[in-house]
Image (spheres, rainbow, N blue to C red):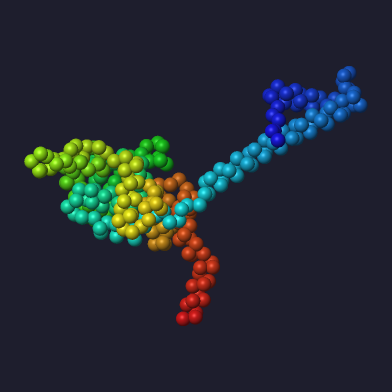
Length: 283
């Protein structure tokens, strides 16, 4: 049934008339004549308030269900997925060199793919111990554009340097497309477009899926968020607090951390611990 809605004028008139309901000393007031009308108007107001309250509750319920929608638990790339995928990559193949640097940098910084595609060469800085620092100039949760500096391991910095040396670019987009190679009439090969086009969001997702497939991981379960989910689970499994993981992932609350780490938390639950104690006692 379609709900009725009252106009502003109608509500104002009802409230005005209701406010004079108790003035028995007015010349126009007659309890016998207006009692029925006042009760009807009071019931209408109550229904209106109930409708508005119900709408609010329904909206909150829908929003809560959308926010708490379960994560695809299998769509992750933990270190145990990134490492074998990285080992399959060759040292002399341009795509493999780029993808190794991309996989490890995205994993260690927990960068969103929208952040990865905006990274530039100038966003990376070397440290004396061989490690590096990466500046995320602007992130989804950083609307003020203050930026965030993140740690990069010496091993990943070496992979990034190898990629930059091969691509021979010292400024602009950090990760770019690989130039096409066409055969010439004399049987040689000629490159087209020297690493000129920056990678897009779609490119990042395709690379993740391809490298997952190469490592015998179902690519249909991999998305652009798989790296962030996997890194979150690795940190929680390493007994880092939700607050520490939240800061590393640059979230504003721990809600997403708990969603991404629900598998880890389930393994630490009361039933999991009790069953483990029984198994240990039986041994």
